[in-house]
Length: 286
Ligand code: SAM
Image (cartoon, rainbow, N blue to C red; front, side):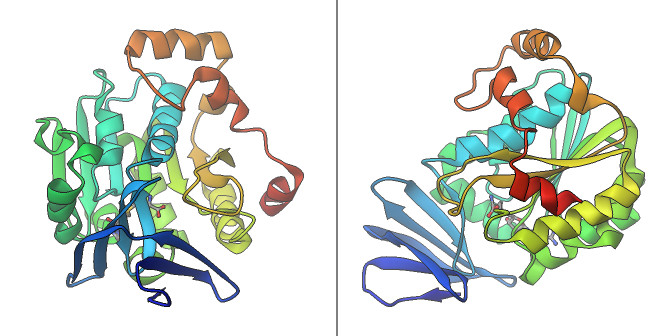
């Protein structure tokens, strides 16, 4: 929910006892699609900021942290990912990072809202940075939950770059969705999800971890600090069918060098450390 308490400020009510606000130096876009209300504002610190139904989704300033950690951790842990599925991801930032791996042959991106894609291309072109024109990308406009129930495609890595579990994103946090995703993974496939900020939304991570434990051989989460998502580090769910989490640091360094990508947040050492969980987070996995 977005409340215009002060003119010139975008106020996001994240919880009924917590709000955060960004100064809006310009409103570049404000309109409703069939699925949600889209806004793009400009803030001096974060650059252009996309909100969906009043909730910040992505900012030009810190999107690299979220996208690098959700793309490179599972892909480099897997080691030979050729086919990747992205659920959501309408701004194109996740596709951009996944496609930086030359070894990835095909990316399917399933986004429910064509409006997010179209308007991100126009107002946030730096985020997709040409990813929508890559011939390896197959963009499907559909509900991700319907797609995973119906498709006969299989994937080495699946990334759920969803909104929070409200509105159209709610189905992407259900046991049924996770079960269908599990069935689409190849051999030692890996599934990564955005799971909110555990200090603020502990139940979201607890629910996902309970479901993952029943479905995957390796179920845990990893962390990264994204300034936009206030309240401590955010969590990414990790459901794997193999031992990808335990790949040694020197092997990750070799894979990272071989990939030839440059990153601003991700490093192999950060990758390894991201799985070290503070006590209050580890408790949510019990
Ligand atoms: N980084 C953001 C965050 O954590 O706040 C989320 C990224 S945003 C690109 C999430 C995308 O998921 C939106 O474009 C939204 O339209 C899409 N989405 C929401 N529900 C969906 C569904 N059921 N199937 C496919 N895409 C969905």
